[in-house]
Image 1: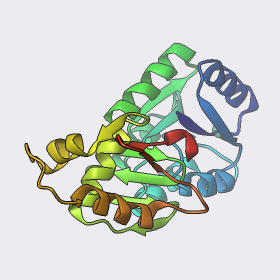
Image 2 (image 1 turned 180 degrees about the vertical axis):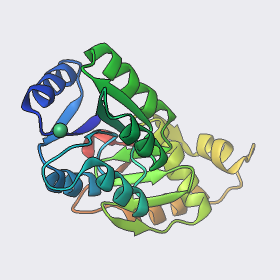
Image 3 (image 1 turned 30 degrees about the vertical axis):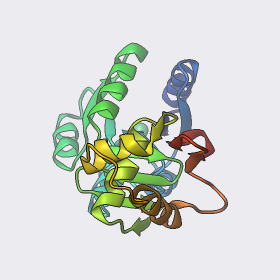
Length: 219
Ligand code: CA
């Protein structure tokens, strides 16, 4: 899981980075609002931890602009005990949760896992799918899928690295209990690939004689 930490206080971002990396998270730190906004705009993170008082852009304006731009990455705001108004405003602007500084690492991790679980966003590298709004992006670029293409990709991305046979996809995505003797699945996968494969990355792997698998590690 990829976490972006936008926090200027070194003591805090160092503590957070160490704690999260020790538990296998991949962590990126921005220590000012402008860099933080640029990093968050890439849409590549699973969760963003956002301080409010920052040099450059402040946390609430970052949050507001991300949401206005359709970026739905879960955000947890890091607030001081006195920042009650900012906390409320943050939640109103679309933050998913908050923690009050100082906090325990275990609490932060529980909250990160909780917002990630509730999130409707599926990620693989620069590719992201919002399963609620059914919007897809590669970086900042929107990708347009036919409804069935979106469903197949979502199905594969929800179980990365699992192999699905054509029959399983026909049954689980199309709802067919029989093989219509067509190449429906292969045609659909080909169309998805044309839209998502960039720079030589192959997100969907063909397992010869078996089926397909979404390769998250390739992304
Ligand atoms: Ca601060």
